[in-house]
Image (cartoon, rainbow, N blue to C red; front, side, top):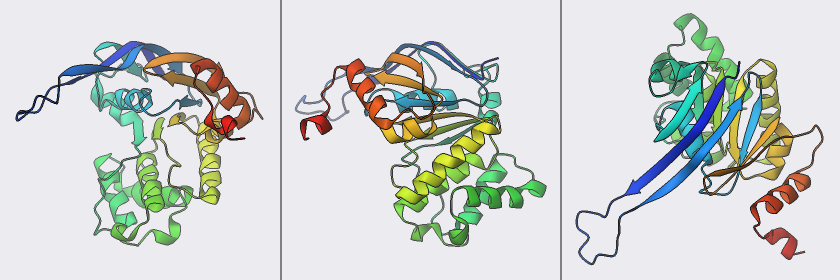
Length: 261
């Protein structure tokens, strides 16, 4: 049974002019973020949602997490409908978004994780061990007792991933997780993702990084302007350059890196 099922999902964001729009510069309208998108994800599978900014990647992750609800179609996670059984869905899902800003700056990394683990109903008996595990997995062991207000952007990014992992979710959603990470930490993170998949976690990772897609993906979902252009497997050893060529061939965009050579 597929762990995640997207069926003909459409999401529209409607815009209204500001109340004090004296000069009439701001106009109403709508943006179709996802256009009748369908896909599924199996247990222990790593799906990479590849596409430029504005392609619908983050919207798809937020629909799976129930942060957003679809305007049409259905989203199911572990057999539960995201609209009708949102609580059951949230128990299964951990999400780390690029713009995470919900930590308490005057608490340490460990204290923050303890707070959010309690919210996620991680038992007191398991909490300390689980926090130590995710601090190790994200390379934050040495900073565990440092106040979050002293964290760099990369450390903050890793703490967001640790928070998503702390409840040991069966579905892990990651939005541009390595955007602020250095090369060594990035490689460690990729290894962690593959280890989670071996433990039967389903991972959906949104990125526009071809190297990241080649390193971790079992399958590639190519999103462009809200449409699913392709759903294809990624072979072992398939290079970032192969995925780059495929991306630009499918989207019809111009590869600026090629033009600069």
